[in-house]
Image (cartoon, rainbow, N blue to C red; front, side, top):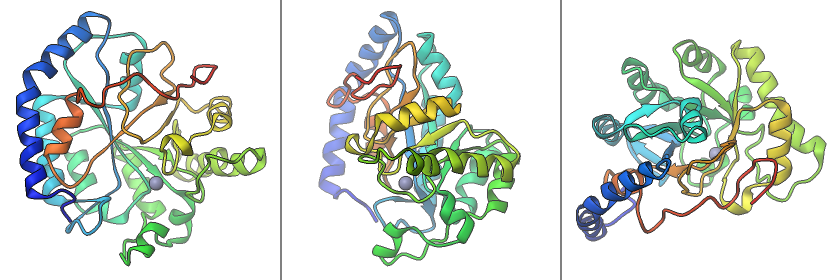
Length: 282
Ligand SMILES: [Zn+2]
């Protein structure tokens, strides 16, 4: 499913090419001033056919990754945090992540990343992995898309894909303050995944992860539990900060032009962080 019309694609192409010199000039200036913003991308499902707005076709995925490899260094989330924290200037870099945990990702997308030694953090919802049930948003859209199995995650972890936690039940954590509920959604899935996969689980992804779905209790709980970072999903860039515990991410859709626009720091959307955890919430 293409989520933008041919007319809008043409306009975005025009905008991208017209603003490209400004973007690179802007980036050089930002680096000279102590660091450029770091884009961190998130995918959901990569399948043969892009039949929902959260699915990217296998063909487009390969095109996107090849384009990113040509223009960016693709680095891990941990390396991104290190560069953000220490204001390290360097070649343009980008991070790739996935949310939810779709079985189909293991047909083409994940093997392609592994073959090409591309780092990736892959966030999974524990309930679906354990009981094999499809995600609610797919059922509502009439899409049959099974989740990953624990065996797939084990193979991925063994091949160098970093597995992260994405709640037990994929619920909106925004308004929850009950500590036992938050523990069961945020900390307990990590313990289960670490035991099952025999690897450390260092990152947590908020479900939905718009500004309204974030929760300062979760940031504190995650930090206290030993997570290295928490990621959101409302399209922000990551500017140099002393404690990049909260990493903002940018969605990837089934096209190449929005990816190009977003990842080269779109001046329309580049803005300072809105919700940063560093002992205090800003
Ligand atoms: Zn999700």
